Amino acid sequence: APGSYGYRAATRLTDAEVALPSNLALTFAGNVIRSLLMFNYRGDGVFIANVPFVRQLGLVAGAFFVPGVAWLVWRWRRGRNLQMLTMLGVMLLPAALALAFPNEVPSAIRAIGALPAAVLVSAVALAIVWREVTGQLAGHRVGMVLAAGALVTALTYEAVATYPLYFRDYVAHQPDGNYSISLAIAKAICDFGDSGDAYIIVWPHWYDGNAVQAQLGRENPDWDNDLYDLHPDGPPFQGDPGAFMVIVHPEDEASLDTLRREFPKGVAIPQHKFDGSIAFITFYGER
Image (tube, rainbow, N blue to C red; front, side, top):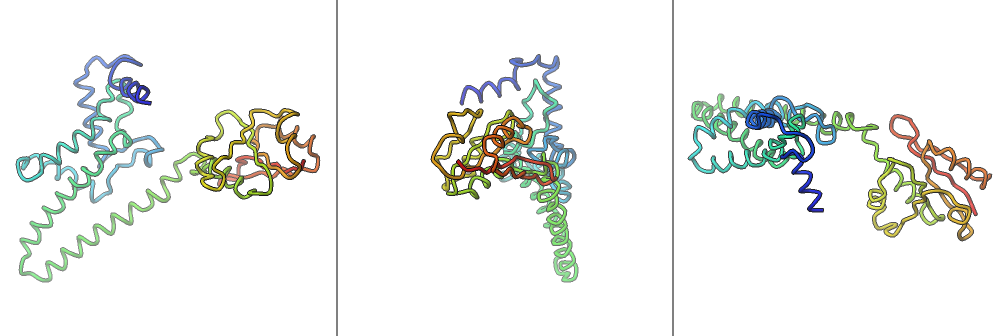
């Protein structure tokens, strides 16, 4: 809601939640510096957004970031240089203005709009270096080939070095190895399909019902069989004759005991996370 969004912003910018630092100018300056350094030195520590504390740019792009900023400041009247600097600065403000919570800076999520500008800044520096080098090597075929080879090597290294951050390291830093409980529950429901009714017994801080609904997609758009507890006059005890499935939290021993007692021929099958621990239990029975 707009009100919630505005309140969240106010808690970072004002004393709505905690007292503001005594020196706001110094705090803001520190936030700006840390926000800029996240591109080529120390990144955001929040695992949801990135690999904790890893810089936002790769080695090559990060190395050219500072020269790029320096050149744009020096030549700020040329072309669209001022626009690029303005874009970078403005898009850093959502992170830098966290005056009440400077410990939350840098923030890759709040400064996401600055990332395209940061890449362009690095590209400007690279383009200038390339222009100067090729200008000096004009007419020297071997030199031009070596320069082109160096550029291709640098960009290839950038891609090879960055790949593990996205597809290995990021996943490794997620809770449960990036195991999605909502996706796994939705898959279990879809796999059960038309065999019968499927239910989930609710457990505190476990799964997101909206996420499960989204994962079900078109196959079960109207599925809404969350059970807050087991009643003798409710599902799965009452209903049309046939098979059913109940998804139970592994710590909900009371519900499991009730299901086993009422449906002695039922089967409880543990479903495991990537690390081998039990994510949930699917109980299959028949009315």
